[in-house]
Figure 1 (cartoon, rainbow, N blue to C red):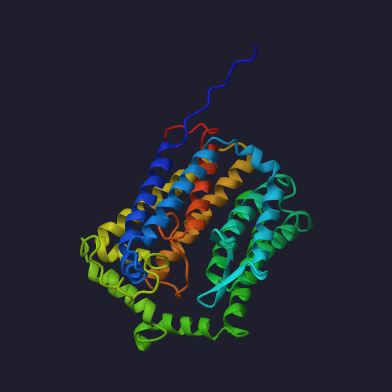
Figure 2 (cartoon, one colour):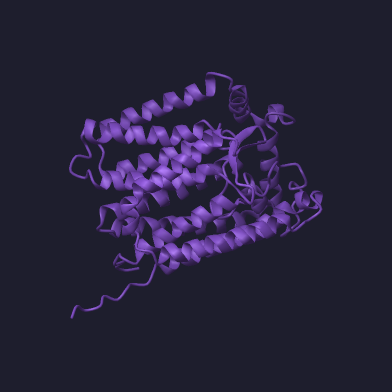
Length: 371
């Protein structure tokens, strides 16, 4: 009779860090969305929706934490196909235009953003694709060109939604997976050059005057602080007024319609204003712990698919967090990027928590020495 193998416990530090970030997110979403909620005759509107999303995300995280990630490998093509279809639904009558962008799908009983589904679906598919080509990963025709096509399709679907920030985030994430898989450095160089040229074309060609204005405003946001530099200036005011200890939870002034969507794209600024430098430092440290645990899981995973999948998930969180914080601190031009696990958004929160669940399941198949 075969000996029953005892399952290892999941990475507790990763689990605890994730739950802490989600908890902080719920509190800060409530605080930063209160004025907008009052204008909608329900100050608890965003809080209630975020709690529901967190509970659904928790269910997804617990499910995938106990679902053998190796089964995901078998369904990687189907998952990617469904994610691509969800992106194409944007251009059907189900697609909804909000704030000048067509990025949402309305199913009647709920709405969701397919870009989040595309991010996870493409990570899973590329990890499976490259794990099958570990012996030819440096080959131009067998590996590099197909990988570029996968990245192009995935990022192209998001770019068509006029979401350049998410396009860059996903592109950097998928290139990270390819890099860890063992791509040639010469191929990486040309991919970076191509990406830089593509980014320049996206900004300076076509009907993209608003992107040029954002770039000019980034150079000196105070030069036009009542128009193109408004978001960056108000964000810096929020961070600056917070000081070391903050104004106090719930006492933000910038959330009163100075910063647009303070509960989403600029939630880190409200954290800085209400909880101060120590509050923002705490959030950054939690993300660093989460990324560190994810990197350790990827490094200790013997299965190549598991390694690349863990790499993609943690790279996505790292890149998106970095871009969000850089935007809020006016370190890069303004773009709409939510802070993973913290910002308001049902689709984003459920997908990120489910992704962490996959990472936790991978950790159960890894022997973490010295951890």
